[in-house]
Picture 1 (cartoon, helix red, strand yellow):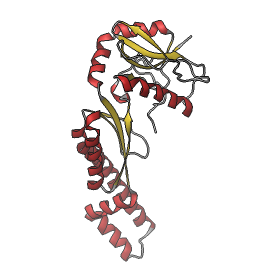
Picture 2 (cartoon, helix red, strand yellow; picture 1 turned 90 degrees about the vertical axis):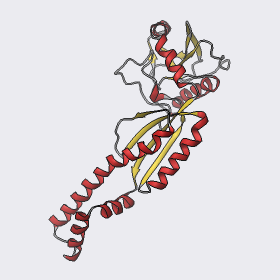
Picture 3 (cartoon, helix red, strand yellow; picture 1 turned 180 degrees about the vertical axis):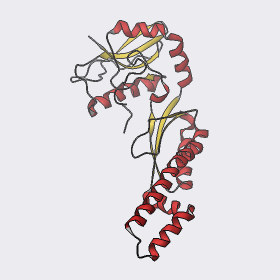
Picture 4 (cartoon, one colour; picture 1 turned 30 degrees about the horizontal axis):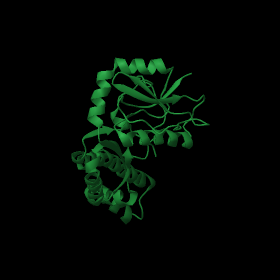
Length: 256
């Protein structure tokens, strides 16, 4: 039977609650596989697993329970290895790497920050910063709204200016928050967000990071900043036993 992998930790990690359930219906019992100084938190993998809310939450609950006691390298939802032996073999082969990551991530969590424009506010900002756009808009106003071509041209100018601001504002978000984090991982571009960045933050400085987010909101009022966290540090763990490089690992249990 294939093996579902939740995360990797030290072999000395405190025992998990007896009978703890993970993904699947009924929930598969969570267990520990050890290889030298390392261990993997696993269960049997249910067939036909899909990223349903119940299983996403089960995955995250296992990681939360394990991470409360000591550092765990979280695997993303859907991480499945062919069998237990594959998991322990990879743990042995990459032992030094995993031990280094456990040391680097000890006591740290992830905050994901997504930024988007507040439409009306960014339009005001673009108009204020661009005299050519203001002149075009005024000419159209004086001409009773302007011709169809005039309106199209104005719209194109505004759209180009807003797009240019997206890159500038994404850089502003990074500059504002990076000093409060131990590491940064920029996520893939997606529709609706001009910034999608994950920050690795020490637990004891989490309030300082959140204060930096609030300060950024005040200084960048034309942006909406959404924060998700604290999360297990998904974005700062390289592919594990069930996640060969270049392979999609499924949905993130910390995703919104």
